[in-house]
Length: 434
Ligand SMILES: Cc1cc2nc3c(=O)[nH]c(=O)nc-3n(C[C@H](O)[C@H](O)[C@H](O)COP(=O)(O)O)c2cc1C
Ligand code: SF4
Ligand code: SF4
Image 1 (cartoon, rainbow, N blue to C red):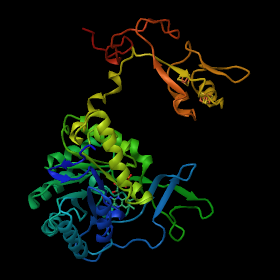
Image 2: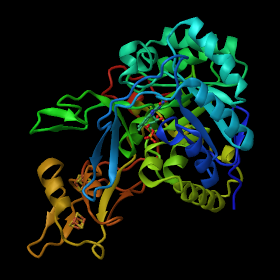
Image 3: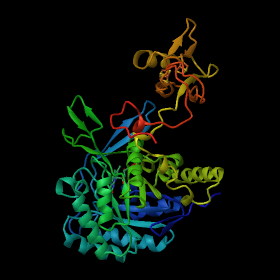
Image 4: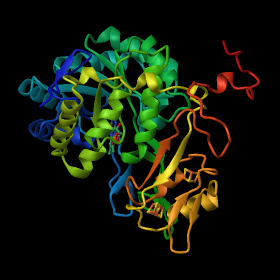
């Protein structure tokens, strides 16, 4: 079995799977059970300033998007940071860390954007012996109306300023948790780096209304006839998170900055995808809330089997491995030509590929009277739509054409050379080919 031990910012944990700051990490009882189940680390549910704790609604706080099989595809919440007092949380954190010295314990913090507030809480967090802190600049609801959470994460200058205070008043690693509710994720990451933060984690939740109750005429979850937007997470947000992680991993200004990947991670494969795109470890919330703490067993076993199969001895061997292959559209090889191929033995003759291609793509699938479906190479642009809509896995595949053959659609010989938009004759800005 491959060694899953992971060092992130010098913090060692037995595997790269941390629980994200959320209800699963809200109290000692949960975190002890999570560690017993095998989680490598936790980011404790976000702490607020000293004083009366925040107050949550007393009605439903989650909304959901289900798949056809009622699987949870997306979860939305209007919950705030911890509603337990600071002292209780700090005492529990210290006890848990003392009992589980081999696990990562990170304190998530959200206090007003004032130096005094950060200066007051940081020494108290340090006393718990937590391994580091995560600055919650991400929650898009409730706290943002009070000038915290994503209200800070949307202003790079504030991120830089608070990160600098934290590095000044706290001597362990500082992670800045980013909000995805922003146009260009590289800007807040750059600000975090300028402020001296050691890493970024992303994504926090996305502004969302998951459904509207058409009888009550109000968004769900509905509290006494009214609803407000909440934060969206779960499998549905993974593509957005992966893209944002890769943008930070490959941007010149943030390249090499450690990243903790978050967003929809449910399986070992999801985790591996985040890690090859640059995340040094990953955090999980919705999957644990949906399936319980024991999913960590499958995450570890699956990742370890894959590492054995590929010959990776440690997670560091594959972190960032796909980053060089993430590029801008303009660099994609326009000489690469593929065609769809239908495996007649697998085909169940449902006709979805035909309907999709005939009505909305390139009329490149022929249907015989007895429902045999064949691709017409002279029409197929290789858009992949038929592959995406076919209900049978691997029934349709995209087959690249060999160099030297003639593409029946264009009449051109497939070239073995790379040619992209930067040198294409139709591009008015094309650089002359060397
Ligand atoms: C009910 C709920 C409460 C959350 N509370 C916090 C929080 O207090 N602090 C925080 O940084 N993130 C919070 N999050 C966001 C998660 O930590 C995580 O960033 C997000 O859910 C995406 O991961 P996932 O798709 O695995 O759920 C919360 C998420 C949920 C669902
Ligand atoms: S790849 Fe696109 S164009 Fe080709 S057959 Fe499939 S849907 Fe039609
Ligand atoms: S969508 Fe797939 S299974 Fe259905 S007809 Fe097309 S190839 Fe066959």
